Image (cartoon, rainbow, N blue to C red; front, side, top):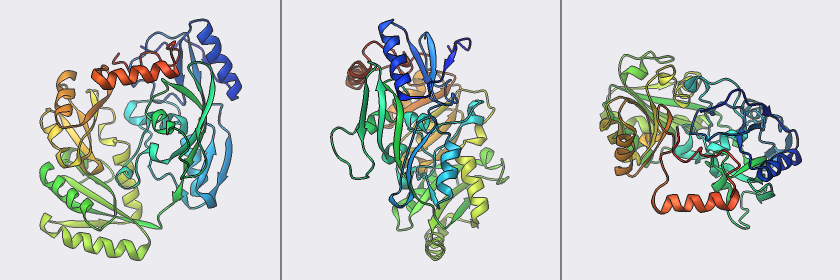
Length: 390
């Protein structure tokens, strides 16, 4: 339960962060760590004594466009970073989502929050997850100690790959005070091919064919009729979408080749760049589910069987990542959702309506406990957030 009456502290330097954490440890206090605060409702939280926001750690430390490397403090707003790199014809390849409307949240997402939650959008199937573009960082552990890992070059392999550990730790291990990420050139153009009226199983087949061919598809999603009916498509039937990006001539050739390969799946339309961008923004932000009060699940599944998860759980679903990500609205019990997902070789995160992460169990749970003890033995940072509480 969030205590909105707690004062939010906003340190402006890494040293202030270190001092606050060290004092909390010495006085047996607990800290809720946030960036812009837009994901505060995800995950349980034991009682805390203060809230620490990284919003004022918002300095651009170094941007080397020729080297495709950007170093910033974690409180820099995601929108500002995207505008900065777009001005140089570059982008964040992992296409990070905001989810502000989906979660009914206020505030602006920060890069530190995106990396801490390892959030990735539709391009993940082509470019990898947020963690794959996370090159290095400086941080303060729950012990009140400053440490760093990685560097500013893509091939840095010195020591442990702690970036992969920090990405997705949801602020439970350390507070990031500086991050270095890889950026990439933005595509010159994009086209999205859309197939209409396919049932979920048939759509999964079409997306699999596209992903396994030489077409370099950068996004693949399936929206059943209820979701496709929303803006910007306003379609009357289910839509299966496949995005291709790059130079104009290359995109045109791959569009033709993919349309030929998919001719057995019925009607195919091509959507131009502007409409394509509007559509994938809708998919990235899960707009079809914004405002729906039912429990909201994010199921990560093997793409070939991704449709089986929602089919075993009555509710409404849409599919991203070629079927590897299923967004599900269902009133089914938490235990059933997790069991169905686990049996298919996946895992489930609940954004609202049930414990977010589930309990820690078995060898993986024991490993998580050891990692937490190594970085934050007193449980100072985000206590209970990933322990299955609500």
